[in-house]
Length: 298
Image 1 (tube, rainbow, N blue to C red):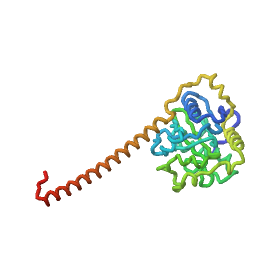
Image 2 (image 1 turned 120 degrees about the vertical axis):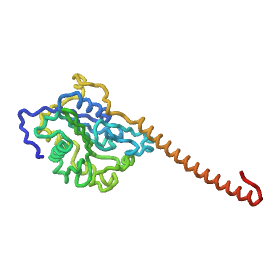
Image 3 (image 1 turned 30 degrees about the vertical axis):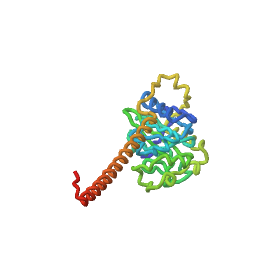
Image 4 (image 1 turned 45 degrees about the vertical axis):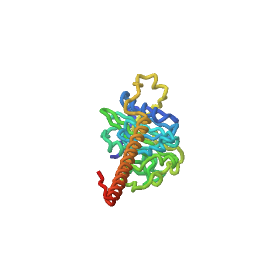
């Protein structure tokens, strides 16, 4: 779908909220509240997060997606967000851009996953095409065949959110906390995390270049209004903690214990079988010895 030709007059308003190093759990709390309780359009930009953190989709299970032992050892926070999508590990090298929109905000855009993904791909393409071979590959943003942007969405009755974690930079060592996903895009071709990913900083001159370009591109569809985080407290938004975004610290520890318990049971079972086999072998030897000595064995 071609990007609609926006007319400056009468564009819908989009609040622009810019943040720096806000913890990702707080950001997700805020986004879920705005999605469900606000009637306005929002663009939220966050430059990095304070600590390396694993973020999973709403249906993800830690034991299937993360390496539990090193995650617990190094006390890496694990969070389940309210939207779908895959599992990522983010840190202060990650740029976050989230778009929260009313379904009728963009003329001609159908409020379904693929059209929204296609529209955002074209919007970011306007920003990034001059810096590399930019593509929307399946549900990822990539330069050539290397992913730098992971996306997730949530669509409710009258609104949708499309949020992206952009890898401006990343620590390759952090990727060791993630398992290789059982379901992966075809273009990944079974590559490891490091072989599959790339850093935006190797293509785009600066974070500012990307952010300002994104705001300019959004300005073709919305009238952008800068918004201060403190203003949220002065408005009648629901500031209660959402139910679907939460920390999974207890879940990770519990799943590790469950796995350890299962392994212990298997170990006990294997040893029980060995003990039974050894006992049976000893019994046969004693029976044979008794028979040779003319004794009965009951």
